[in-house]
Figure 1: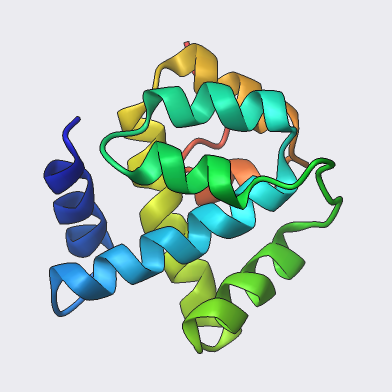
Figure 2 (figure 1 turned 30 degrees about the vertical axis):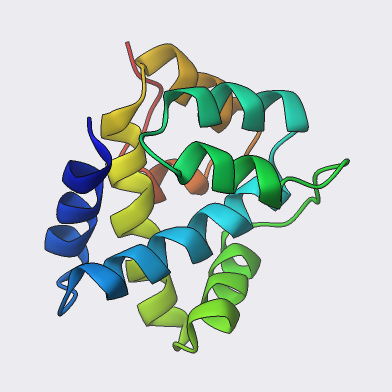
Amino acid sequence: MRYDEFLARVRELGEYRDRQEAEEVTTAVLEVLASRITPGETEDLAAQLPGPLGDFLMESSPERPETYGVEEFCRRVGERTGSRPRTAEWDASAVLSTTAGAISGGELNQVLSQLPSGYAALFGKPELSD
C-alpha cells in the first residue's frame, strides 16, 4: 500500500474532512502505538508501513515500552488530537484498521501479541490473522 492510499483509507474510515486531518490523526495514533510496543517490534512494523510513516514510528519509539490498556491508549490519542475518548477510539480504529491492512498477517500477529486482547478490535481483528 502506498502512502497516499494509506491516508485515503484512513480518511474514508474515519470520515475526516481532508487529507491533512487524516495525516494528523494517523501520526497521533502511531505515536501512541510506538510507546506501547518494543523497539524491535516498532522497527519491524515501521519497515512495512508506507512513506514517512515508518520513519515517524521509529522517531516516536521510546527505549522501553509502557504498559497500559485500551482505555489509556485512547485517552492518549485524544490528548494528542484534542478529541473526546469516544472520538479518540474512532480515530485509533481508523488508523489501526488501515495499518492492519497494510502489513503482513505475521507482523500484525507480532504487534497484537505485545498488547492485551482489547487492542485487537481497534485493528479490526478480533482474533489473530492467518
